[in-house]
Amino acid sequence: MSDKNKKTEITNSQAINNPSKLTPWQKMHQKLMNAQSEKSSWQLNQEKDQLYYKKVLVHDDVNQKKVKKRKKKSYKSFQERLPKLKRQRNKKLIKQLLLIFSVFIFSILFMLYFISPFSKLEKIKVRGVVNLSKAEIIKASKLAKNKGILKQFFKKSTYERNIKKFSPRVSFAKIKISGINQFIIEVAEYREAAYEVDQKSQKYRPILSTGRLMNESIEKPKADLPKLKNFNKNKKEILSVMKQCSKLKDSLRSLITYITLTPTSFNPNLVILSMKDGNEVKISSENISSRLNFYPNIVKKMRKNGVINMEVGAYSYPFFKKKEAEKNKNLDGG
Image 1: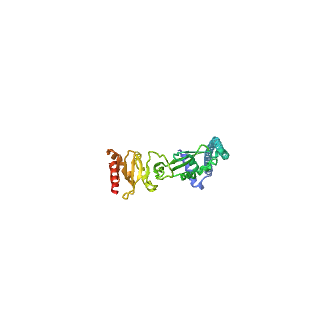
Image 2 (image 1 turned 90 degrees about the vertical axis):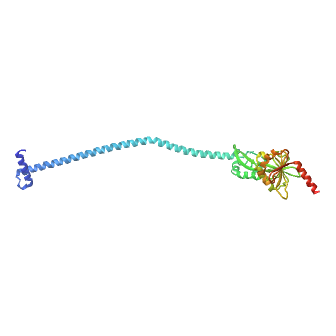
């Protein structure tokens, strides 16, 4: 730096520090310098403002572009969704119309059905009867033909009870609709387990598996069922014997032809079983199911037909000894 410039700076600094000592020339120079510095700062502020406004404008442009893009996208998405919304609305309208139409059609058909003969009971079928007749079951049910089938079906439990009350043979009764205007009555009967022999008429009265003695007479009973003698309609004894027989195997029960009640002073429940193979079994009625199972083994050891006594223990003897014992009793009595 030259000596002149150094002197100028010194004088300027001195002038700033001591403005009262400045020369007129220095004062003019100082004014020019201040004006230039103010102008430069104003220009800098102007430039900063311009840069700021440019940034703001650029930012606004970017935001406007984003907004436009969003609007375009939303518009496009709305355009895409519009047909779907229309289809959904149409579907709802169609469903509502179909519902109204179906209700209307159903009500018309329902009215026509009640007017038509299809709503009246035309035919009644019966299934499952063995000893009872189909006509008896229909009559006992109190179902009415040519009357409303639906009304009677909704009260079917009443008609089913009528059938059960009609006969003790009926164990089950069920009414079902078949086709448009027909009923099927399904019936199950208690099986016949034995017969009681009427001493006067020599006819047979059926005894059901429940032990119930029927007030019916049969001339030709089933050969594979036992016949009860001398029970004289004693329901208690009949029920006891039937319960015992029901516990036997079918093969063993089918061997019994007659069950004769022969009470004694020592054993009021004594019965004699007449077997198909020609033997007789003396046994208490309450022991039939527990002791008669030994019968096949005892028969194998017997050489001739005879009597098997199962009152106390189990032993057998031939028929001629039985006859001799009866003769001796008659002689002693004479």
